[in-house]
Length: 284
Ligand code: GLN
Image 1 (tube, rainbow, N blue to C red):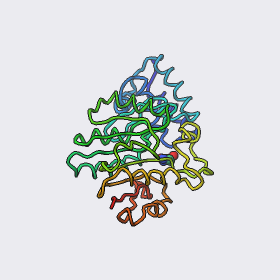
Image 2 (tube, protein in one colour):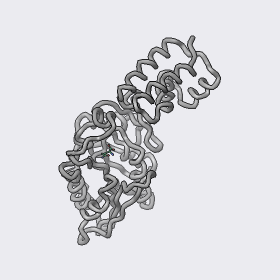
Image 3 (cartoon, helix red, strand yellow):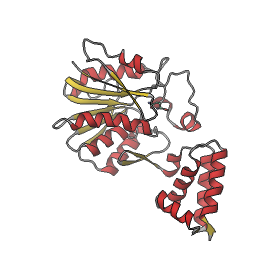
Image 4 (cartoon, rainbow, N blue to C red):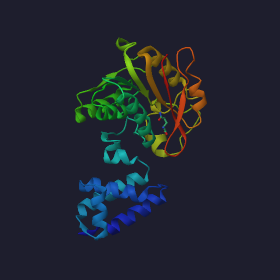
């Protein structure tokens, strides 16, 4: 038997040296994953200096090396928490981000005030927003649309695992999605790709492991957003609500994509780090 505390400390040093800010938390998550338990239990074991099976520690050490090579934590554990749900993620699908939880919140708040809302999530990726809305607004019917075949597999797998009776995932492009719902939708939500093509994401986890087509949105990053706005205009009935995630410097540009003849004045919302992150408005 070997000591969990020492193993965690060594792992934390290695991950910190690899430039990972959340080194200790990541080490705890990886050990928790190998032990089939939660981080709280790992912290308790570390406090009491509890012994851990050397076979488990060897597997943990291998995961720590991969994390030090900047494989995303969520690819190593195979899951990402998003609001109240856990999503299976891995190569081929965009890892859901904490800031997107707030985008989902705006959709949830809008849908919660309605009787039996129809919600469409364009470019759902792992299904994060669609499935979170379905989980938190049982009265809603939610359709998640995804074009990328690899991502679609993850979204469908997550929908099956969560078994929400009010959610379905369909293949489709955000530009011409679900025409059978034209004029009938209450809420459109989307976290489309929005990084300008020429920008290189700083974190290797993003640059090397998130699918490029979930990140990049043309010369100014907003080509997919223009398609989202057009699709939202087609899907929403008058009074219908739209919320889109965007980059921290894109608020004014995104608001300008909603012309006054079709939309009420748009509003931009900040995330928990006080950066512009989402814009909302209603269909006239
Ligand atoms: N938020 C992403 C990132 O930080 C950018 C693309 C997106 O979310 N649509 O990498």
